[in-house]
Length: 128
Image (tube, rainbow, N blue to C red):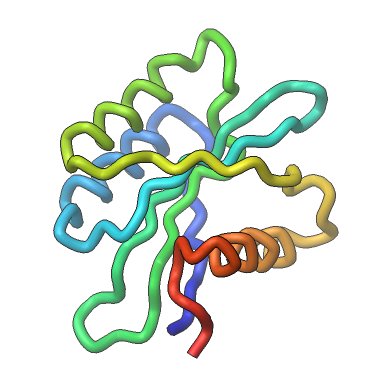
């Protein structure tokens, strides 16, 4: 199975899009994750929606709003949107502490790092 991150932006509209994407694909939800990190001396969150592969496909998409939510005020509404989604589809949010993406020379290296963590913790299937 191939896992690939699909990155949305960091704004309010991107969080709404992520939540709507999860709602319309609720039958495909594998996991809901929140990656927690400190970037530029402030705590930020990255909500992630992990879907099951579509049909006979071998691709497991991981939709992310990378470091798009400050962990403190005034972004509580964005956090609450993701938590409400979790309650609505009855899937718990799994929090994970990670390094910030700024510690990597390329975003793809950061995503490989996250995929490695998720595989090691059995949150996504191993590479086949």
